[in-house]
Image (cartoon, rainbow, N blue to C red; front, side):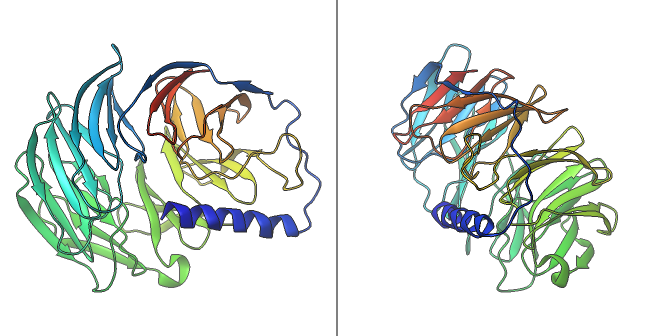
Length: 365
């Protein structure tokens, strides 16, 4: 899926470049790129890695050959096991209180004990798993057009809900209170009881959004990216649209934190929206598609934030760090190594990435 998205983004950039654009120069204050300042590297035995998960000082990774845990404080690998699940990789999930890490692909789901990585249980899909979410002491995820809840401790199936056949629940659900929300690609948003999986309500808006790419909770709203170039704020009570924002082009993903939704549009902007109102707090131009020296390359990696800093890794292996409040670009970090398409910040000045040899890198900004 990632190569197809990469081709799409390059094609979108070419189309946008062909359009006449109003003169709007890149910020003159954009900092010159700094070179790599590498603090640590860890070999993992993989070529390809899913985005990392950092829970406290526990860094979980999942690759095409191994999965494991690194303790960030002493920089030691606590455990590593062979990767045995078929299908595309998903980001690992972690419940520190329950001491359980969950690894998932389209073809399987595993739970391991955090302390030593021992396998606790494993299940296979009837059709194809989607991205999981850990909540309510359980694993929640799609399997084809069905949505399932597994007990986190035992792997026992607790309930399943069937949406319309021939759809695919690929994206992670979202949980607010005692409800879980899914968008399986049939034009509907479903709200289910978290405890029993019973349908509470559904909102059918195929003409408006076709399907919802991501669901994230902010206050009493679901922030959802659609397949039709819009971001929505939807009520968790009934799915009604409170606000909508037209990004002008395909939304790769949105990142929601502290009442703000951040997104990059291939039109050449990073936006920060107030999740309560949908109003633009700030926008920052990343490219004018005229080969200006300050232009960013397109983004494939998801945006990430921590401690008031927004991290954006572009396809030229340059990491851009913006101030979350003002949108000012504070620093550019240019890697001397080709990086995989994700970044995991550790704090405002340090972050993790991975090179194409499957090594995890800790860098300093």
